[in-house]
Amino acid sequence: MVENRGLVYVVDDERDVGNLLTRALWDAGYSAESFVRGRDLLRQVKRRAPDLCIVDLGLPDMDGLDVLKQLDALGSVPTVVLTIRSDPTDRIVGLELGADDYVAKPFEPREVVARVKAVLRRVRAAQEATATGAPSIARFAGWSFDVGLCVLHSPGGSRIQLSASEAKLLKAMVLCPNRVLSREFLLDQRSGRELSPYDRSIDLAVSKLRQKIEEDPRNPTIITTVYGAGYVFTATVEWDHRC
Image (cartoon, rainbow, N blue to C red; front, side, top):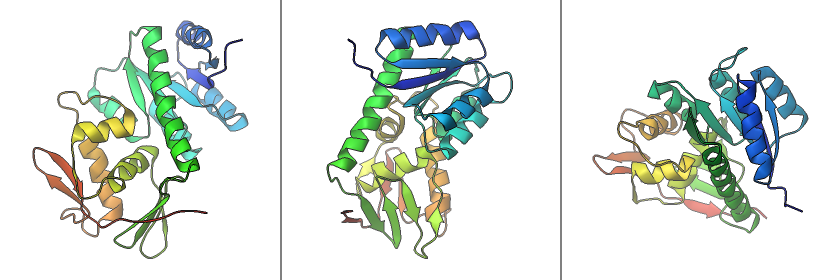
């Protein structure tokens, strides 16, 4: 008997594409279910949370980017985006909304399955690290960031909402303070992708994160830029461990 590797939902406006992917996923040892409408996917996610969702951006009833927003609000479900859109802005926005990876159409089903495996491997490794007592709460400049739960509290005690991608980015930074972190490294830590020419997704993500944690985002003191090299998380980080 093949071990079940997890539950994957697929939503694509073309039923044949959804069926093709679910067959490939079943063959690779996953349970899989496909949908044509975004609202049907979201309804099923609320009934039974999957391990990962594959989301086409061009859906008949709602924009795929709106699906990503709602998935993120439901608990940061790992996602792989499918798109035929040529504008790289859509892919960047998708990643900013919490997508873990994207695949351009037309695609090879085995490539999509490989991306699913890679995303789930990273997610489970992070979960195991938390379960085995890895550092849990990072305190810096008055802020408190629970790495395992991806919860951020301000110096005044207010809970600050982070998207899945913002939480991954902040986690990568607090784990490597006072080091120059390249855009390639940060992109890999956040989504497991390689940096492509003119890809500004990390710069946009850093800008959004600065808006939340910097007193003056235009003159940042916590996340500073090293031009031509990347970013440095300059704050002193102290760690607490949850019992």
